[in-house]
Length: 160
Image (cartoon, rainbow, N blue to C red; front, side, top):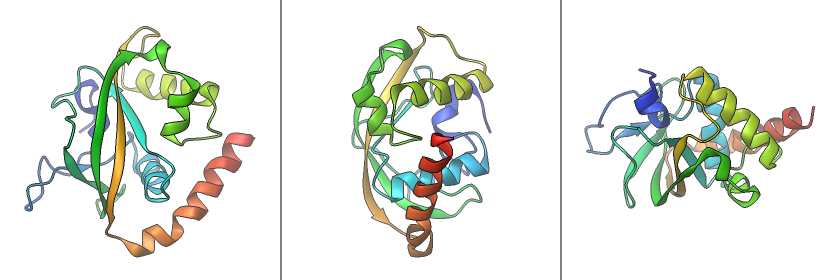
């Protein structure tokens, strides 16, 4: 299920797992979900953003399962902060917290402009919710062992 209201949890595997925690898959494809999950599990991605119209909106203290693109529970993550802001107001410091690409604001803007455009919600002055995250527990040690390799590929691809 991918739509403008739920892009943070795009490709969602279910509204809540039997344990009561929601299952979150970041991105809008299995490949992007795995890439973003690897950067989170590697401890580099400590933030994300979503369209401000997301339902349900993220909440401070909320925990959920970080899911792979094929539906495996990889980790438990927690929302630390939620800051409403405009897309155009994201700073270099915030882009670094997202941990993606080459860690530049330019990369962040390009990648997120493309992502939100695919979802049909992009505007330079669009309202977003910028969240900081905490990795609570890694559940899939095999995925975690591969995370540094994913991160290295992420950086190399951004450099080309």
